[in-house]
Image 1 (spheres, rainbow, N blue to C red):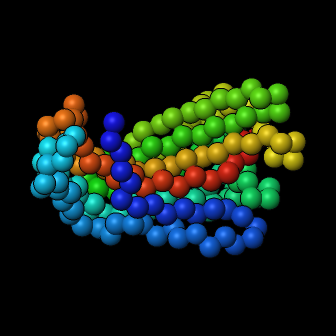
Image 2: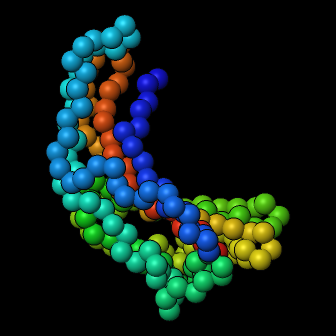
Image 3: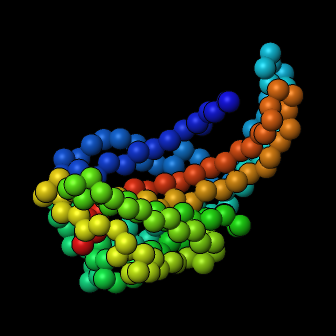
Length: 180
């Protein structure tokens, strides 16, 4: 298995600012990754990736019923109402992945995973799904996250020495959450 990251940025939520670059490594545009000199293990290849429209989670600061109710650095997500997630951008044909995890004091937990076409710009996680998660109180050591990502698949390619070759770009935002 061969795996390589071209770059990454990290944003950490904290009451104390932590200086970690969070800009996207790649700007919007078309990219080609090529290996023109075959190596010992992998032959030559060329693959394209179109990042025509940068992805942005629009309501990441205000999601949840009645806006954002903060508990420290956690965002409270009411389980009794649908959770609307909105975004803009994302390359044509790409998907937005929305996932949440909640872990209670007794270490019981649950998660959800939803997918939507990036072109839709919005998705509501049904309250029925959220109610399947355990309620979490960060003051008791219980926690959760919400994860929103856009993944753009480029071309698949053939190269000697590989069973499958592909190029992909993923833009991910993770927030600490308290599902109540």
